[in-house]
Length: 318
Image (cartoon, rainbow, N blue to C red):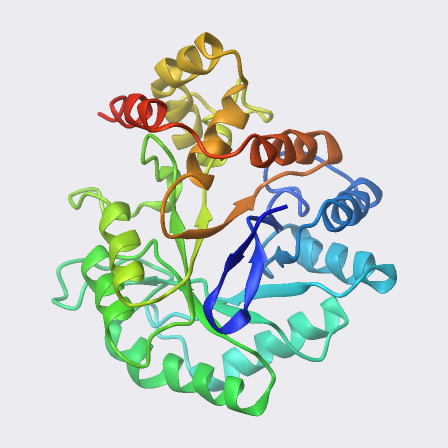
């Protein structure tokens, strides 16, 4: 497994095992298979695990990691926190600390390597609002200082953001000190954001976010590389025809054709694409079992795509 630089946290594996699949977000799995998948990932050289309290019923992804790591080598673990002020969200520092302590208890650890804000930033000009979001002022004046204090005390080694909020505010967050130690950015060949995108009149700016992160030395974890299953050969769960994943799956028909023409699976191609993008330190996997993990490990072993294939994939964007 290739190791890549990840700023404050040193070098990490090119693949990170995500918690969405382990928690049953991307189709059904069970605890024993999820735990076995964690062990297989570590055995294959994966050095970072990425979970969140919201991944699965009753914090399932965090509980899976807590069980799996009782008898496994030490790896880096990241989790997340959601705080908002739309509607008003209360004492941010208290909520952040409480969420962290809950995650640490479930994970069986005394610190997190990376703690991420899992809440979308609103535009600073007040041009949009949505439930479960946070204003720039609250992020800058309350959330960032709370993260900085936790890092100073050793309860976390680094903090970061998930960059699916309003692009102007996210770009400001990447450029304003104190900057996050890491950022999760959507990276897939068709630039599909699915149900994470809440600003219908504003286009996503994932390429600009990647560039801003690089310009400001903020390491990037690539997320949604298979677009919630839309960039695979078949969706592995039932969703209504008007669901964003179903709509994106239909849009991805030309992507699947290219994968077939090149003699590979759509999922393998999706992961090789993300692994080939400059500035992406590690690609987060949404796998829920060892079979899916094996396919992703194969993609990493095959190495980056050649420039002509990268260009052909990007040409499929609408």
